[in-house]
Length: 146
Image (tube, rainbow, N blue to C red; front, side, top):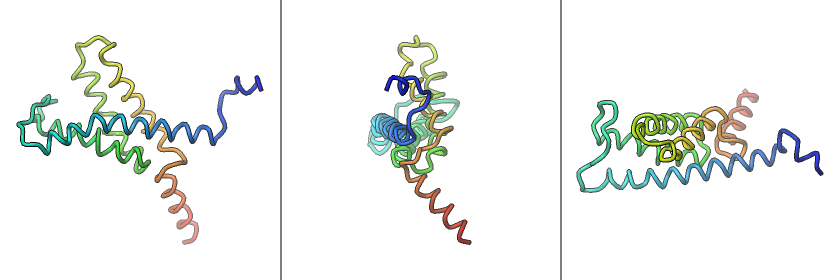
């Protein structure tokens, strides 16, 4: 029993469940930031948002919404996860290094955590409990049969 505490890796199933929980939790947290941006885009009020790198406030808001809402939905489903994680990672880079650049680290922790999680899913992928895994198995199976 004690030796399991010191093993460097958990069982494959436990790792898969952990990645699933991390992926879905992260996605839903992102959606809580993206949905208000979607509402703002669809609303009647004039758009007030940071104009990043010469982009208009409306375009900047659209890009942030697509990352934090659209890509987060894909992430929750585990669909095109590595591709969906790229805009999330890029958005968090902009927020951490540009938008919040003058703030102390204690005020920038959340975008940093999201940046690291975006990087994790870019590299690791969705895991075995995902639509990516289902598609991969189907594509591998159909490739073997042709």
